Length: 322
Image (cartoon, rainbow, N blue to C red; front, side, top):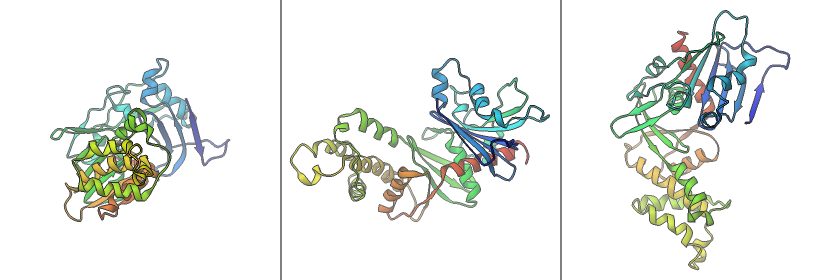
């Protein structure tokens, strides 16, 4: 288990947060000590996500949480410190299931449906936020809905689609202050499986070429039904003696094929001129922006951590009537 901390306070200073924000993922856990003006007083992270807790009988969600935030708790405080949690703590396999809310969903509705686990620790009051479900065109999300709420707080009046790239990329329709529909693509998982566990692993290395990636995005648009064939060319190109394609980085071709197929499907569903925003950071968000640019779409990238905090803050204000 790995844990990291970052504090604005000195070693001898006592942190007195107004509330605690928690993003509990499958693999990782992040916590922030917050004041009532949305300032971060301290923060910590751990590799004890839901999977780690499920694999270790000595761990519980409560014990892991207390282990990270113990220094922020005041034994002499008569009021319980609010703890707002999004993510996998609310899954069936999590701390306490927070049933999915159906779309269309308003941010206040999501906060109102939070669940509260029974606790014998009087220092904290825990609220676990629900995920979202879509019955027609069946789909679910858990954790991303809080980022969408944070985006809506930061961009009131936004009318368009928000993309959250990742292992399971999400595209959500935001309209009139609600999340009205969404769509999931297994692009990240498919890339990981193909590049590490399929025959294509022999053709994917650390080499990269933006021009090859963008050219593959264009090919995917022109041949939308050729996905399975294009995948095998990643392997075959190095075996047939075609020097041009043999020198193309396999990672760029594979990534362009997988992301390009996702983007092409979504672009075909959008109205002309539809707004698109990206929530993410690092290389992956940049690749999605490049892919969208091939289609003539200029998408802004919004930092995921700050948006998550904004969404948790919105829930805190609803739940605790701030």
